Image 1 (tube, rainbow, N blue to C red):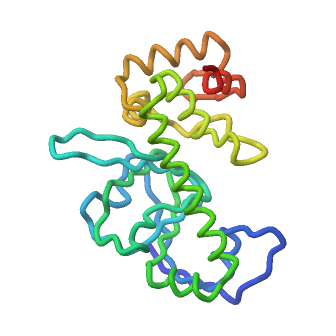
Image 2: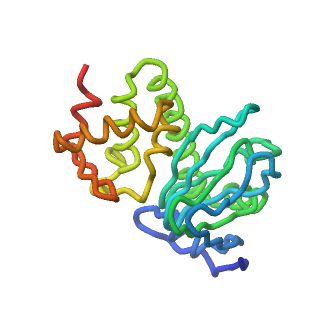
Length: 223
């Protein structure tokens, strides 16, 4: 990994965090990870915030008995590891690359300096964190009240980023049925059953890679 510094800040019409980080003089490292490689582990010191340039990241937590739960998945333009900004001393979970992944690693003190100096990035970061908190609340409600079939459909739509942008990423980064099972709190066999059902109904196309069709929304919206 190497530390890269850029020149002076440039004004952009529509705020793009990637453009900003490339042009604002933020000191950061670039980390490249292969599929399955750990980015950081549960219990390690929390000293930096990550920004995904490309690829995908799985965030998981292991309890005292060794049971793993996948808490979140991150993709391009996502921040993660931001708990250190609120005083979190150690990582609460493990971040693992699920595909070849490129990440900007920003020291928390450096990010605090830039957030205080650059209002555009500060506004974007706050908006992102608020949206992230809403997503956590929605995930909790989903776990408590929805069936595993509906939870799987919602997870696939979220991974495809439906509702977040005009052109969703219909073909997902490689994600295993085991990972999906850990994300929604069920067994791999149940995930396999529902994936086959979704495919037969034309909600997804599944041949190694998963292609999510908009019609999958009917599973989530159906009462």
